[in-house]
Length: 369
Ligand SMILES: *Cc1c(COP(=O)(O)O)cnc(C)c1O
Image (cartoon, rainbow, N blue to C red):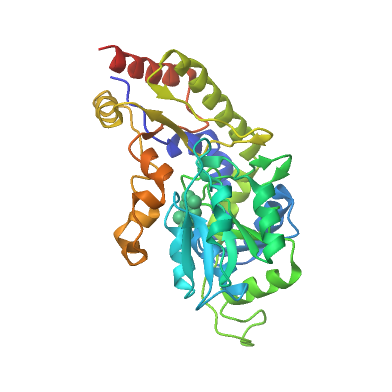
């Protein structure tokens, strides 16, 4: 039986093992465990890779959102609009500041925030919009940007799943006030532990975010405010610097794997393959299909040794954590309908043609039996 994991971080490590091992050894020898030269180098390299003026490294992608919101002064009595279909980091950080998350449904074709619906959710309390470039697909940024300009709102791009994705030739993270990234091991650029970053072209935000993430002090013992402790460690930075060099290549391999899946799945009418937004590049953090009889297909693939996932099994507003908002499936019909159909297939740069063919053959066999 073919065992096909959902991601294969070991295979990726082995493909660059000498460089990674050397990087880890260097950090150990210099004992640059927290902050230090490796972190500073990675911040510069990552800012250059996404075309941003500034990069502030932090402990994880969740903190990246939280720090950005705090640095922008968002808090009690404010509202922040985001999408119903995301990982909880996007909305829990809004609540952590004291503000209220306001959920908008996703659009039918692209799984990103439904732009038409945003305007109806704007109130005098709205301070920011956080679109999520979900699965690696850019949200429809032009109309969102327009709304933010018209209503004087901050625009924070959650890029945790979309390193190097482009919208009309522009890098995600470059179109708003700030972009936030996660380097969780399974993300397109993944560390060997937790790590995250904020990028921005705004000098004032850069200073405030850094201040907040570093206990409110840019110079040791000179605490201008109370902040938090959110730092990247040297080992993660050194590992990320090695891996960043391969990110373009790995992204192309993900895109190639996605197009092979979509081409082979054309012969399976029971499955809908992902739609790529025109003039965008989708970086396929996840390859998500909609499948008839999804639960049975999922079970069948599992029996055949093929790992799959659901992203996400429950739209955020329907989670127990958001009971207080009193939202039902009627408020978010598209995300609610999708939740019973979506299935994430194995996706990583190292996935082989043979593995993809095996997966598609099994899907075909399932529907033909
Ligand atoms: C992974 C992820 C985050 C959070 O990143 P962590 O590094 O795990 O804290 C935020 N938003 C989205 C959409 C994510 O997928």
